[in-house]
Image (cartoon, rainbow, N blue to C red; front, side, top):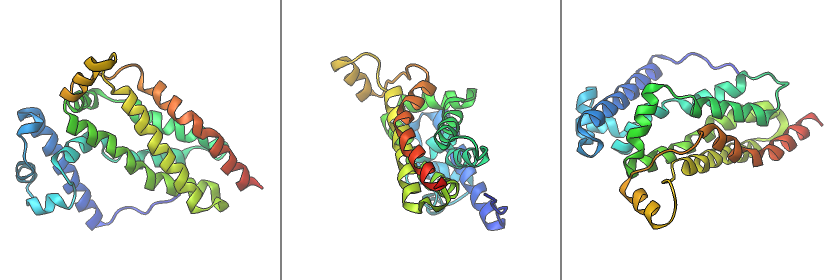
Length: 218
């Protein structure tokens, strides 16, 4: 899949989005997420609050975007880059694991911040829905005649599986009332390898991917 280079307008929009998310993260680290207003983020990025609202619906969304930035596009690009001979289910799984489980030091720091605030955690989990559109386009191209609806269903299923894996990974340790209290307080410690959880959540989708590929070959 060949994508034309972005024009000047698109580059300016990307630069504005990046400035906003970086300002949001910096202020959240400096002051604490609860002490950051949309107006503060907009001012730090050199734009108006109205412009801010064109990019993000909340401060939490902007802060979370600092770690999830363009991840959905990278997942789609990774799937597209896989050889046609690679099983589609495997291509999707490996692309997801690469983008979610291989975090750098900066991303791990942001994740720690996210797990300490319920609103940030919810925004982080909600961001998984962004996977659907770009992944759907890549799957549709890979499956050729399988149809856009099949691609959308598969991509939406991947997004749901990723969210389920993240929910389990970020669940408070232990169980019962103590864990519920920790979760309500926003004190969540990610548990176990995220890559394992992602693979387990995506595994039930493999037969559907295989069936779609089989129909394409017929």
